Image 1 (tube, rainbow, N blue to C red):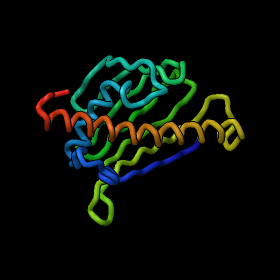
Image 2 (cartoon, rainbow, N blue to C red):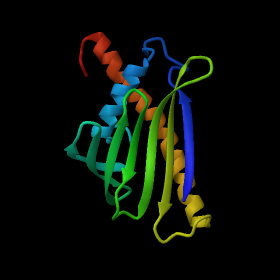
Image 3 (cartoon, one colour):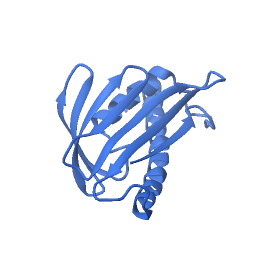
Length: 161
């Protein structure tokens, strides 16, 4: 099992026409991502909502060519946790958290803790997979914030998307 975490500041390096995001706006974006991750995660080619409960979703995804079921749980305005259900070669969970930095600025942290079926812990194969996931998830954090910012900008402009 390995774990990698990436944190970025939500409102750093804003362009002149980019809106500053609030916690609620980021949260709404994370909810949209939970329902359909395709605009946010390039390596995902399928995302279908199967069930919706009060504080969870059940979805089927295809990530790097492998189908998997995920249970997505919500801690409102703070954290979305994706847990892979049995039957997939990659098990574990992924968290998307909205955090307050020491200076009061908002941050978005993605953490994944995964294990690979049939791969020895600490092996070169596991380390290579972890490095690839780390690069992918840094891109996913940035893509998530960019997509949320575009949605907010559209709403502010009155186009609604």
